[in-house]
Image 1 (cartoon, rainbow, N blue to C red):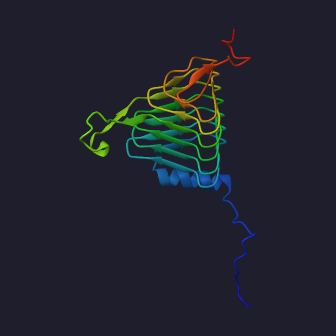
Image 2: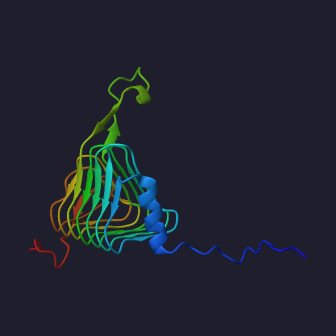
Image 3: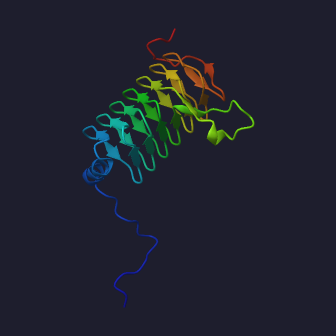
Length: 193
């Protein structure tokens, strides 16, 4: 009789939250700072290169398979913000997300684009352009939304599902589409007419 057998119905026991937070702190060598009460889902990756930092505010929730990559600059996530499953944030210049934001699953925020000025030179040899991304407080980004470099999203704005934000979004506005276009104002926002 075998001492251990594989049973596909039995799922591995997830690590307790204090152990997950301790592992992140140990692996990051001080480049990742977690506020009190941060909850990390399974397979969350927080990677900060030397000289870069990731700061997560109090009470934030990062769901399963969320990835934050700070190649340079800083990723700053405000208190009580929730990042859904498979969200990805990649920073070279910097990404700042305000308090009480909610990102649904598979949201992508990047602060860099490739340079493709010369058609004869491969893109990988032309470098990148980086500009910081600022997302205000109480912003809602629906499933698979994308926010690109240099964009500023105002407080209380809503980004629709599968939208690609290439220009600034005013406070309280609701945008959708690829590229985004304004939709009717979000009711209850401080700047709604």
